[in-house]
Length: 212
Image 1 (cartoon, rainbow, N blue to C red):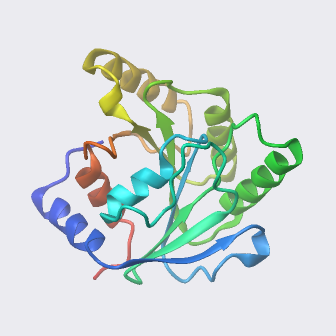
Image 2: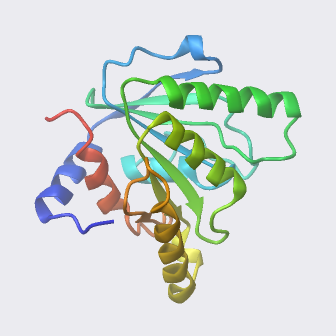
């Protein structure tokens, strides 16, 4: 991810210091809130750290619910950041132990949302830095490419990977994303636990929000 300027970092800090509140959880597409605000979404495999990343961004420990049990988030959860940005936490994908009909329901909900949400500015696809890209991640890339829906890869849990392997992974992901038409050209490298990359990601997201 390109290095943000001090002004962009400050704008990100100020936005994410504002109140962020839970709006509602949607188990089907008919329950989606009005799309009057710019919106971003966080997608990723189950247990990739979506809720932890959202909590780190907004500086709250329990806004988004975290769990050691993969597949706990079974709906799209929406959060309003200071009436300037809507944040959508999507159900995790790729958890094989969930019942097949439940997985199918989650998949249909997420795919329909990602393809048809007019206010969606960018989808952040989270990838666990310990494991790299999986088939399910590439399936999401392909779906977003087809829908011409912009997305950006965020590597999570980077504090658990040594610098050398992490740099190699980032280079490989960068190279692969060149073949995807809707992908953002740079990736974000983060650690919710250590705070790595959080300020930079805040700045990136703030550019997508309504001006103050």
